[in-house]
Length: 266
Image (cartoon, rainbow, N blue to C red; front, side, top):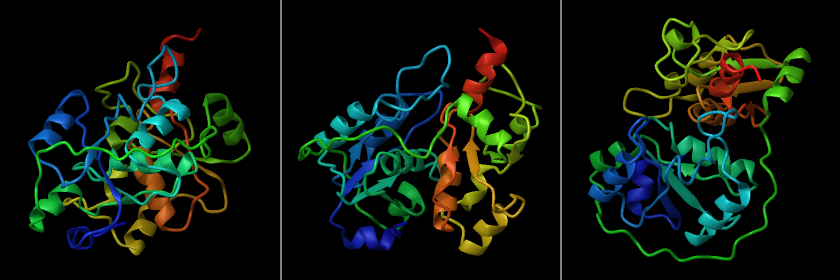
């Protein structure tokens, strides 16, 4: 986590703007062009931080590791490059970027506490130019660590893993479902809404509040986190990492993958 004052003072890092608006895929880049932290490069949730959508696998599948590594190298990001990432959505998209890099073996990025709003409020300069990247050699990467697919999920649950649903309570309860064809949650999952990781200004809550956020989750068992499509679940994974739990898994396909088999069993 990086406070705004530290970034205003200057850091030697590649800065990544992760702003995005679900349902309006071009809006984040438009916001970037209208104003961003000087030197920041833009990465798009669906074009850069997700792979092609298929019948199953969810609305935001993980990107091909080699393709992502090539994109990062084009921006000058190698395995040990210091990186700062931000959004304006309470870590919703910056945390996805954080998880992807960590899962591929990169040095995890620092997330800007409070996001772009905090930068502007602190009097940080705003740029509108698109900076020229300084590419670096592309490192060899393997697959993603720290995740499971739907088959592995069932096996892990049978072995005692605890499943955490990161969506809003009404979606978890099946009272509303604005995106996916089926409402509800995966049987056995506990509801731990991702928005409660931060305050209304997008600042990470203190360790005591984060511990309280996960207080209803039994300790000692492996934890698997999901959301609608494997994006905002990463906010809960980031919060767990701040508490020292780096072993929790992501179910990338999340509810959009799970319910695709209910809507289309074959």
